[in-house]
Length: 309
Figure (cartoon, rainbow, N blue to C red):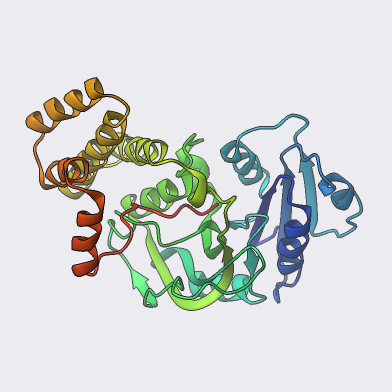
């Protein structure tokens, strides 16, 4: 029987976390789903653990040589047999009713094309991180700009249509998941949110969120915006967001040398905006003063996204 959904688990050198993730995948309270594990040439005990698995729902594949995170997930996606899929990073967890709730939501209404659940942020030891709980409201959303400016959906809490993501092609960008959600919305898809925390998203020192430098991050955002502009109607909102992303990338590159800073000044004069002014102040005003102003205004961290892996 063809599975309705696929749980895709990309992994590398996280055997202990993988056991927990796989256990949560096996514990789903519905039928007609599969689990696809793709091992990115792990050198720890992961291959031994996976070789011992004897479960008809689980298919295991292994790269002989290491590939990028994006390529590992892309292989898993192309191996999926389900109509829908969720990418469960090897350090994240699913609630037992994630697939049941997701499939029910997708089937109950004609409009939604993908499903996003709330999630519980956990630390390295699996403890809940206070103050970082997902807080979006539930319901159907049809706004094509739903995921502009911020990715509210880590991979582990999104049940998405497999073929629609395959049709986008391989995206070699560390923000590929944020690109996916924007692309789905810009193509006319609706999204059904539930505030119920049906997944646990682990945040720790080795995660992408914590290790990517600002210059690389800003380049990834800029490249995502360019991809969306190339593939979808370049609305005013998308154009403005792309200009902002370009300015941010130009700014972080400019911090490398005085010559690069002069290049940013020239760019800012040609493309002046509120964002350019803000970035200029970030360079010229003491950081403590800026943080004081931001705190006074009730503003939080200024990163533009939190990626799903």
